Image 1 (tube, rainbow, N blue to C red):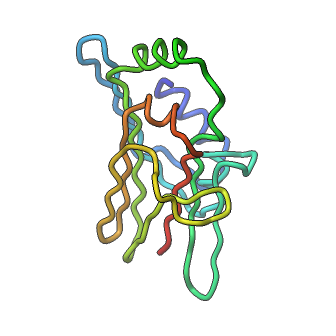
Image 2: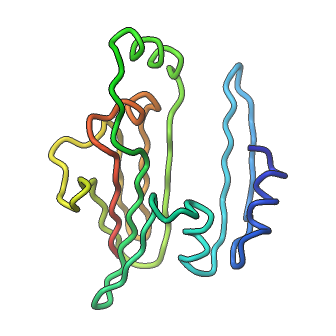
Image 3: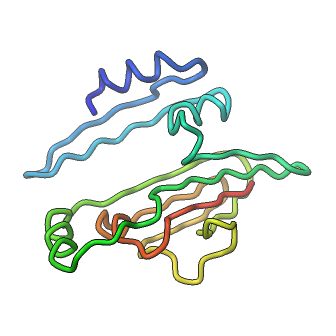
Length: 153
């Protein structure tokens, strides 16, 4: 998406603003980095997923929980298709970061909310006030289970 695409999107959602947009080319790779500000989690939810299926927010007894579904149940693909897609996605990665105030806990969960014993290949880091998640794009696309991240703060 171009900067103007992001500007149009955020202008349609109350409480959302584009903090920064950066696009850079390195050889044949294009890296787009976008930072957005949001006044409420409803604003963020409208930006991330207006259908309400890939993002949820709940608050119980002072604990806030964000749940992000990055990919639905993987579809069945033949070995030769997986090989073609993996080669096409080589060098691409997915990176995601959430910052807030206070300590955060993060874990991958299944569709029932239980911790995953074998989450998608990737790097999940939790620091005070920040959670980041990065993995090769092919690992996200071909994860054996849906990739669902729960963040509690």
